[in-house]
Image (cartoon, rainbow, N blue to C red; front, side):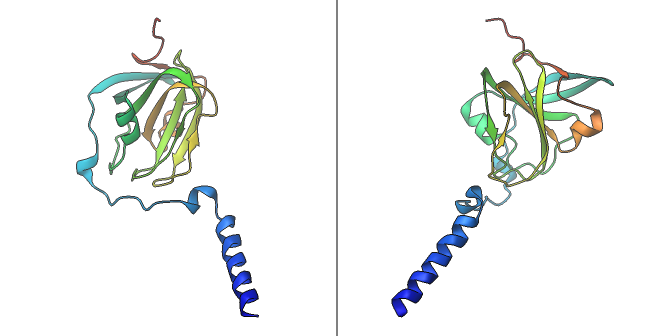
Length: 168
């Protein structure tokens, strides 16, 4: 009887564990906020042509594995006209997480020619679940959460920045 009870208890625990979303089953605690770990990269101009007109930003460029991995981690604010653009050089489907990112963001997925393909709005801080571009892109622009809606940024709009429309 005791063996059967142990078996049923174990089976119940396994069932409850399996019922969790996969990303939650292995979630490691995020680090405490540490502004000293926030990277600061040089600012470059970026413009988005929307139906309403041109929106201008100053963005940091993350163009190597370490910079892309760190992204906007350990920041507590991001101005509406600031952001970070992630340069992948060649088109690919990409996925981003929000580990150690303390502010919600809009993620704008951009094709090699600068066309916005998809937008993930108001991503959740500290979430390890990947946010996918769902299509091949060469760049991702992270802006303050809500910026896309506030500024009228939509798929199909054009982004002008040095990482797009490269001659190969």
